[in-house]
Length: 338
Ligand code: HEC
Ligand SMILES: [Cu+2]
Image (tube, rainbow, N blue to C red; front, side, top):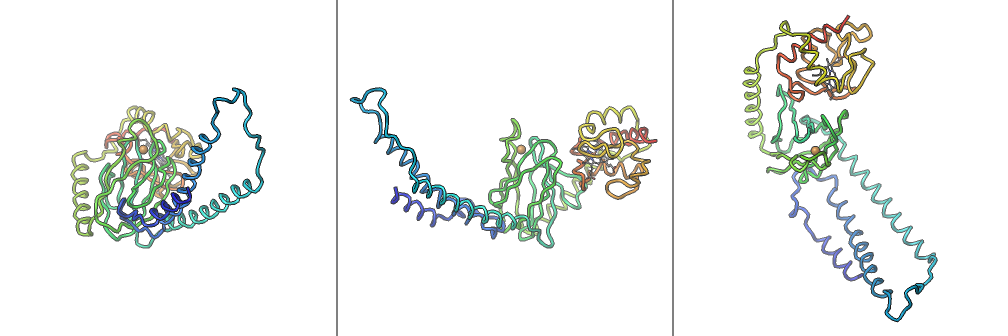
């Protein structure tokens, strides 16, 4: 067993993980080294535990000439054995714990000049938001090579997980909580982004592709997106607040907003703040984004969403709202303000 373990350890040491799963982002957090370190110890533990299971099963098996109720060897403890099988794993855990913590701090360290992108998990797709794009989109997305990225990660429904194996980064997407991942793509190519938290029956389909491309290709993709967004919003019709209908707004509110908002004072929070008197609350003269409570600004938050200290308010696309829905909602909110 010692010989098998030694051979495995050598094979692990010379195994180029990079050939099996390319590293496509800054890997100086030492994820691969940490992974190999765990394997070095996992290999002999696996070999010895299973080796002894097989050996004991043979060595102490029931013999034909023994009575059916024969008592085995009465063994109540071997102190030296118990000491070393407690101390060794404990030491190993301490080293792993410290190494993992240091690695984790590296992942959480923001980098200067980073591109801020938001990724929002939905059952069962990834929504992406980019600064400079008026609306979010689902599916494939692009990142320029060698530019640090800060991924702001959250979820609109249940817990998902953001994992790009080639980037060596992974983080849970938790509803009501925005967490950040920092990395820099270093290899041009297409990489899978997969959800690794079982999130319902569509979980297996929850994957998309990250394209790491040159800055020029990124710019081309970005301006293409901008034009598409402009075309889409032109066809969706302009926002006409004056045409809002209170009763329609109330129906939409109960269907799409009441899960997160009470129709009560600001302090009556659910996921988001209470929205009664949003236009006329002396205790909260400003909206959460710091703007004045005018119908236009309230409509702005409903359209664009907002992510602040309280949590994430999804945008109109995520909530499935048309321009007239937004106008109806603003009319309803106005009717609920003193
Ligand atoms: C997933 C939960 C969620 C849903 C669904 C949601 N909101 Fe929000 N909303 C929030 C959170 C959280 C905030 C606070 C954001 C912050 O400041 O951190 C917020 C803030 C707001 C604000 C600003 C409040 C203020 O006092 O400035 C308005 C207005 C608003 N939401 C309207 C709506 C409407 C209308 C809908 C339905 C279409 C809706 N929200 C659906 C979570 C949600
Ligand atoms: Cu998921």
